[in-house]
Length: 106
Image (cartoon, rainbow, N blue to C red; front, side, top):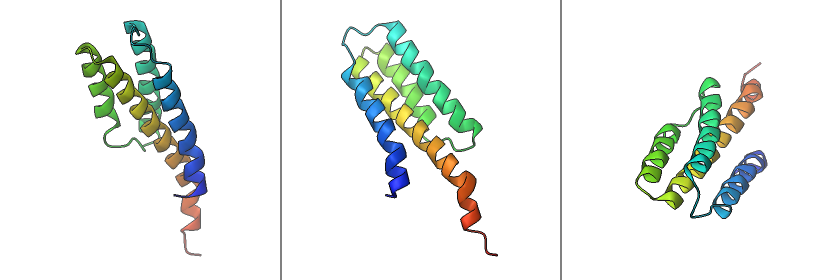
C-alpha cells in the first residue's frame, strides 16, 4: 500500500472507528438518518466522479435493512463501511486526476 493510499484511508478508518465508538445502543432514528445522509452524500460524490465502488450502494441499502430489523450496531457498522469506501473512492479519483500523466509515453 502506497504512502498516499495510507494517508487517505487512515482518516476514513478513524472516522469509522469514531462513529462506532460514539454509537449508543439507544441511538435513535434521527441519529441513523443523519449518518445515513452523510454516507449517501459521499457515495453520490464518488458516483459523480465516476469512481463509486461496486458494493458501496449495496452496503448502504443493507444498513437501512439492518436498522429496520433492529440491528443498530450492524447498521452503523455498515454505514461506517460505506463511508470508508466512498472516501477511498474519492481519494482514488483525486490520484487518477493527475496520475494518468505519469503513464503517458512521450
